[in-house]
Image (tube, rainbow, N blue to C red):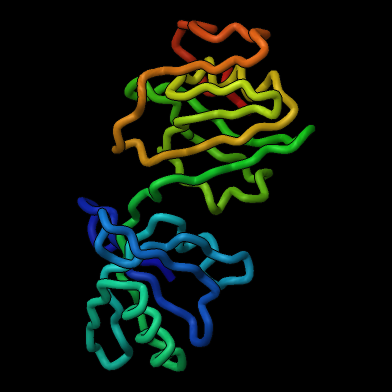
Length: 210
């Protein structure tokens, strides 16, 4: 069960199952709270918790609220209360620092991107994408590195689309759109690609289906 607490802030309460949660956490300095790094497919929380979500507090079945400021504290409390069927966590639906996605030859990626605020932004993920629950709509693509060494850093949606569609496989780095992005850079070791201003017209969802 997932309940919205406020329409003004991306904060939610999620009811936890008993037993192990099958998630991984990380401490991040800029967050100062435990952050979700991975949610395993076998987890009851898969699709409810997402990478980047920040744990704010743990509420037990008796109504007591525990503030957790580190992974160590949170894990200790989760382990101690794993038989409590009424415990809940309050999480902030923040973006992760980064998500790295590797494509494979012949794969239908099933993503749609377009430029928003001068950044190639993920606006939709197809149900056909097996990893759809791990992606975060609104994250921006900072970098593409193809299997033949071509690299686009800070490019627009047209350039990202072109790089992905003209390679066998690549590594895509998604970043929190709130961070500062670098100026566009194009590294083409073989000089075989057109590296800039591939399409300056406004992209559409249909045009940029990966």
